[in-house]
Each structure stands twice: as structure tokens, then as C-alpha cells.
Image (cartoon, rainbow, N blue to C red; front, side, top):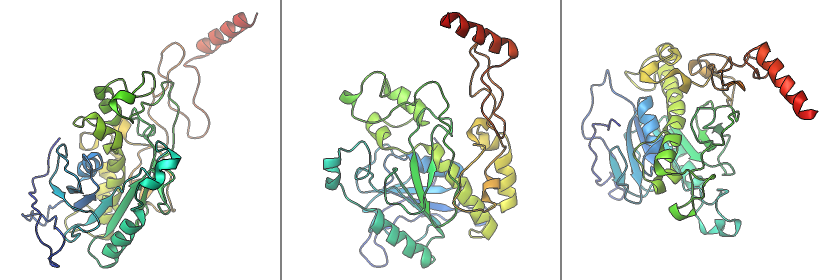
Length: 335
């Protein structure tokens, strides 16, 4: 993982109260990457995706995060200075709405989504930042969210997450079409049961697309592929609107994202269809085709199936001969 070259030190803000997460060196204006502040950053799953998309990221969390791979400020997310950043992302605690939390214990966990939203909206209205993103689990009171699904991004986890933003973003469809069940990455070490939770930390890392976190951090993490998916859309908005000096134009971003091997990413990471909150042209800038790549499903004989048609179901067999063989096998079993 390539860590941002910015150095960060907590210091007093203009008000003299809140610590400040502020870069100490200004990059060349013509080439600078936009800055993103990741509140409630945890061990950096979401930060890694935004960084890969093209942001310089600084994380903020109230607890120490020794595994966080970027510049980090230990501070209260509701009090840290937001000045100096283009985008502010936040992942408030989700235990209050998580299905994994027993219903009789959900009231023990704080509801920070509303105060975080109020603070981020004020920052955008005041011109401190031009975008915000709030992440949480299904059932959380986020407003007009889009959903991102790990199955659609071809990760080993399903792990649906909701994202709210002041900008129109595109989520993903839900392609729950694999024969193998998704890897469940939750619980503590002694709660893991074979056949349900990941068999090992390395298996959980592979399923999440994260290679640096221990198990406890993995259970709380957002897969970087999720925020990479959203981050390229934020950059497309910025380039189109000229919100950040030196960013590629919307057309340049669209050409780059439509390339089969953009920025070293394999083509199977480019999800071919999306759900979106409104009918903007942004979807066209982050999609590369109408059908998923071939080989995501296999015939009974093990041969990769062709891609699903734009309309219609996946083919079930690779050839007419395989279809006839399956038919004869079913007839033999029925007799």
C-alpha cells in the first residue's frame, strides 16, 4: 500500500479548541490531488479506496489506529477542524442499526448520524468542502442512500453498505449469483464457526480486498473497492464542475475509467451496471459495458459460461450437448 506523502500533526484551530488535520506541504497546484478527510476512519478500509481513486486522505478517529496506512489524527470527529479538505467522508458507528447487534442492546450504542450530517452539510454550505459522503449499514437513517454490494464488485463478501451524499452517486446492482456463499467477516475470534465465518484472517483479508488489517479491524472495515467505486464518481463530478483546480476534465475521467485496465485495475473490477438516485450522465462515466465479463458462472461441465445478455437470464449450459446430457441425467434419476 502506498501511503500519502503528507505529514499531519494535531494543532489548535483558529477557534483554539479543536485539533486540526492539515497538510504541511502544498503540492504543485497544477497537479495536486484533491484532499479527503475520513472521519471515524478505523483501520483505513474506506480510506484506501478513496486514495486509490485519486485522493490524498487523512484519517480521524477518537481511538488509536496503529494499522491505519495514511496520515492520522486522533480526535473527536464532531470537533475536528474540517478546513482545508475538498471532500469529507464519515462512517459513524453502526452498531445501533446493525443486524448483528441484539435488539435489546441497540439502545446502548450512540446515534451519531444526525449530528454528523448537520456538521457536514454546514461545511458544504459554507464552502469549506464541496462534497460529503456518509456510510452506514442497511437500516440506518441515512437519507436517499445508494447501496454498494460486494457480490457486484466480485469480492468474497456481500456486505451491503449504504452511502449518503450531497452529490448524485451511483450504487451497484446486487448480483447474488455465485454458487459459493459469501464469506462472513464478523464476530470475535472465539465466535467463528466453520462454514459460516471466514476460516482464517487471511481468508477474510482475501474476501475483503484488504491485506493489512487484523481480524478485529476487518469485522468493522469497509472494503476499499466500495469507496474506489464512489471515489471515481466524486472525481468525475469535480472535473465536470471545475471544483478542484488541476483535476482531469469529466471527458478525460470518463475515458480513463472506460479503459479496460485503468490504473492497473483488472477489468473485472469495473461493474457494468448501476443503480442511481437520479437520471444524470454520471453513470456513463463509471461504466464500461452492458454485461458482466464472461466466466463469472460455469456450466455443469466446468466450462465458463458466456456473458449474460443485456436482457434475459444467464445461460445455464455452455452448449446444446451439455443441455442434452443434463436432461438425460434428470430423466435417469426420475425413473
